[in-house]
Image 1 (cartoon, rainbow, N blue to C red):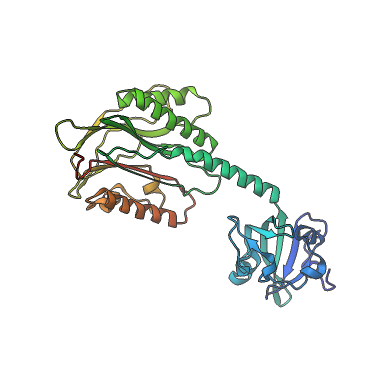
Image 2: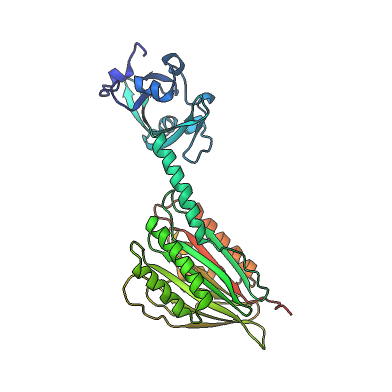
Length: 379
């Protein structure tokens, strides 16, 4: 330890007996004091640690996403640069065997006579951090079940999907979407959103997605498909409730274009974008699925699609993952003039990029599905 003890002058309590490591850095970032726990946590000697700054490349630090962390971005340096304490940061420091020691860090500013120093307390959270990483990876694999299983290889219908997770780590969403062939002249499609962002939401999403796909292959009426899902949710312990749209898109026998029928259980109303760029929103809502014991049959909605028309369905994250919240009118305005499916999906991509770029305390996943009649139908 150094002979001139800032830790003692600052009267920080019991620093030698704390299990947290403690280091003190001068205004230039150099380490001028530390406790014994800091040496153990950092696996360094007193001579190695004394005088080192956060800018020293030997730290080989990374952030919580394992991205290289420049010295000026270390919590202590951020506190010195901003004049404000930095609390609750996570940083990884490479050790001799090539692995990382993960630290939970609080850096606070103190007056030491006429000088300002930053006192950093850190706790080794390597075990907890690595467990969290493994859990995040497992949940990510589960969430892949929300995505369409295979591409739709049908030449008489245009289809496009988008999916983006903008939730914080371990805050897993429950959006799901799919489109699939039922027969030579009919396809099924669905989109939905489970209430919550936890393991129950993920479990419910998996149940919902696979129930809708299996029921959609065998049942003729869209309302019966949603009834199956409602029964699955109300009879399975631990599931959450959800919104969903399920429908069929059918090929016309003697004319160009497609016929769409769908039912909506508590989900945002879809948007129809016509080939001339005009937009309308077909309405017809039922109740959320799995919330109450009884299934209330939602009204059937029929939408004829002429060549170049397409139906766009989305989860509420598209309009709610931003501040201020996007209104329905604003969404329609952004899609007006999209005279092709490619242009519509380009506008959707812009909206999703805007949502992801905003830093919000409450975020949501985004799923989008578009189905349409080809402008030039196959012969």
